Length: 170
Image 1 (cartoon, helix red, strand yellow):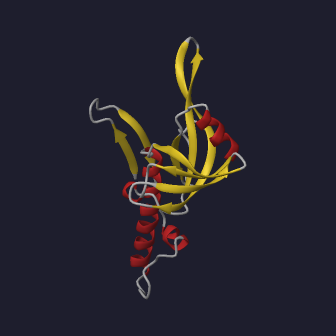
Image 2 (cartoon, helix red, strand yellow):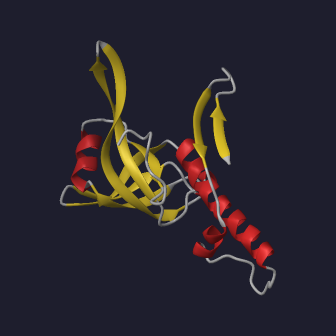
Image 3 (cartoon, helix red, strand yellow):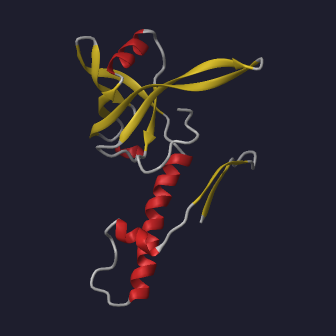
């Protein structure tokens, strides 16, 4: 199956990813049809469940949520321990999801300005409310504090450990 993302205004293909599924996919997810003795039914069901999981991961990669850091909620010795971001249950976030924190920096390449993502930190979501979430900073505690003091706009993007981060610029 191929997922294509088109810009509706221009009709231009913006991104694409091809997904495949086999009968072992659903077994790896431990979600086959229980009690069914029909091997064909089990095989098709397992492939469908595996394809569904891969589709969810792919959509998170192709259509990433760009969220922002609102503030540092807990700080110890000048190091950010927990931060508040402007995405929550409404946006599909769930506890224990990993998130990259980054800012955009402009570079001149061959005389033309281009933007690049600069990774600041990695957080793990602990508390997810309707529109906001609190995440524990796993990596980059000093960098978050320093970037916020410098007035940089910190953005966030979801990480799926089973999906590569291609296209994120990290």
